[in-house]
Amino acid sequence: MQITGHTRLGCLLGSPVAHSISPAMYNESFRLLDIDRVYLCFDTKNTDLGTMVRILRDMNVFGFNLTMPDKERIMEHLDAISDAARMIGAVNTVNNENGRLVGYNTDGIGYIHSMQKTGYDFTSGAMSLLGAGGAASSIAVQSALAGVPVLHILNRKNGRSFPNAMRLADQINAGTSCKADVIDLNDQTAVRQALESSSLLTNATSVGMAPHTDALPIANLSCLHPDLTVSDIIYNPRRTRLLEEAGKIGCRTSNGLYMLLYQGEAAFRIWTGQDMPIEAIREKFFSEAE
Image (cartoon, rainbow, N blue to C red; front, top):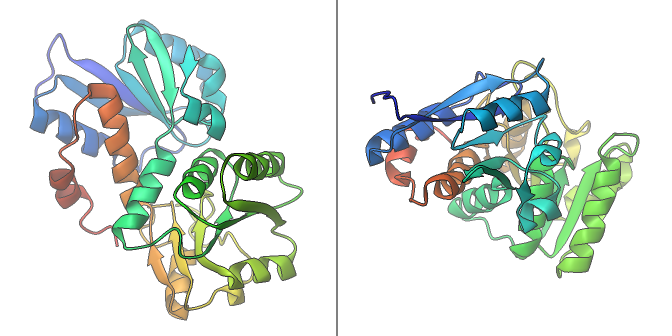
């Protein structure tokens, strides 16, 4: 791969980002398709997001991704937002469309595709979802559209994202055939009932991500059962403590690497108008996803 005077820049914004494999995935795709672009990571923990966006705009980047905690905050700094991203309330992909920064959300698409690749059928039963942030909202909306009959959104009533969980449930109930409700994570009886009736539990929070790998997003693991598929959008570590404990109980488990792959494929198409060389990327960077 050669950097030229014409090479255009793209990047990932968020914190932490040093663990991300997005640069490897995108840069290899650019190399294979002979596209004169490069992709880097920028940790925005101590950076004003508005200032960063103005700098990226002035630099004429081709686009950028966002991870926690910037997916919701970015929206006020963009020129336009896709209908799906506006419904979800979060943006993870921004495209520079002739000077206009347009926000999209590919998280839910990536999650649905990744779970379908494992053989999971979203119409097979109820789903319990931990979280109501940007990624969780995208997963909730796309899962409802994919045919999940019942969606339990598990969130602490005293948490800052609880109002968003309520909004999300109302939106899903109004716009899809899925029946969504919000359950307080502190209500152990209600949580147990939700998980006992579910065929899928998804952790869409950052709880359990490195370096805090001992943390669990649910307090009572006895709620898990062998008929439950447990997925985690975290991919660092490959197997979170939640997945480890679920595996011991006999649950089928899946981490967040393939979600990253397929949401990245959707973002790549937005930026370039071309298909990512998905099989080559999967074989080189995602062979240990399970």
